[in-house]
Picture 1 (cartoon, rainbow, N blue to C red):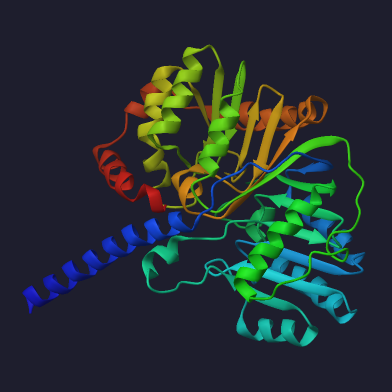
Picture 2: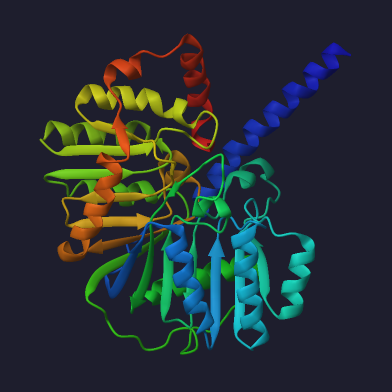
Length: 399
C-alpha cells in the first residue's frame, strides 16, 4: 500500500511537471511577436482611493446610452459587488448592452446571481477557464486585466478589482492602497479593442469594429500608450522603460519577484547614479510572496537600491515612474507571473505636467506611509524564514 501511494504521488508529480513544461512551450508558441503600440492622445484622471473610483464609475454607468464593457480579475459577491451588479442590471433593463467578463479564478458571482444577470439582459462570461491538454499550466494562466469602457467614450484601467477589501472594508487587510485611471480621448479605443479581443476569446462572439464601439473622439492633451500583453512581454516593456532612466526610478508593486535579469538591470542603474526606490507591502496577502522577494531585496539593498515597505494597510498598486517623464500605471506586478504568464494591460503616460502632482501623491506612500528595509534587518532572518525562501524560490514563477 505504501509503495502504491508513493507511485501515485510520483506519477502525479511527473504529470504536473510535464504539463507545466509543455504548457509553457505551447503558450509561448502562440504568442505573436511583440510590437509596441503607437502613441495616442487622451486625458487621464488618477484615483488612489476605491470609494472615489467606484463613485466615478457609477456616475458614468448611470449615463450610459449604448454599451458597458467591463472586465475584472476578481469580482466578489459582497456589498460593492452587489451594488455594481444592480447598477449593471438596471442599465441592461433600459436597453444598454452590458457585457461582463471575469477571470475564471476570480469570478465569485453565485449561480443565482448569474441567472438574475441573464434575465436582466447582461451577457456574462468567464475568461481563461482550465482546459486540456495542459490542465495544470492553464490553471496558472490568468487574465489579470481590469478594463471598463462605457459607450466607447471613457475607459478605466488599473489595479482595483470589485470587492469590499479594495475599499478598505476588510478587517484583515485594513486600508487598501491602489492606483487606477479614468481615460478619455482617442486612447479609449485601445482599451475597447483589447476588451473585444478578450471577449471574443471567451464568448466566441465577434463584435463589429464600427462606430458603435469606436466613436469619433477628441484627441486629448496627453501622449499615452496602452500596452496589452499575454505573457513574456511585460518584462520587455519594463526593460524598455528602465533604459530611459537618467535620474530616478520609482517602482511600486505588491509582489516583487523580478528575476535575475531585471535585478541586474536595477543594480546597473544604481551604478550609473540613478536613484532606484522600490515600495512593497509590509504585510503580504499571500503566503511565501515576501519570502520569494527577500533574496532579491538583500542583493538590491547591498547595491544601493532603497526598498520601502508600506505599513498603512495593504499596498496593491502597480506603478513605475521614470525621471518624472514617464509613468506606468496598470495591472502588471513586478514579478515573474506578470512577466511571463498573466494577461495584463498597462498605460504609459508621457507628460511632465500631468505626472508631477501624481508623483507627489505617490511619493507620500513611499515616504509617509512606509519604512525603509535595512540590509541588517534583511540579513537578520530566522532559519525557518530562510527555509521558506528556498522553497519560495522554486515555486516563484507561479506565485
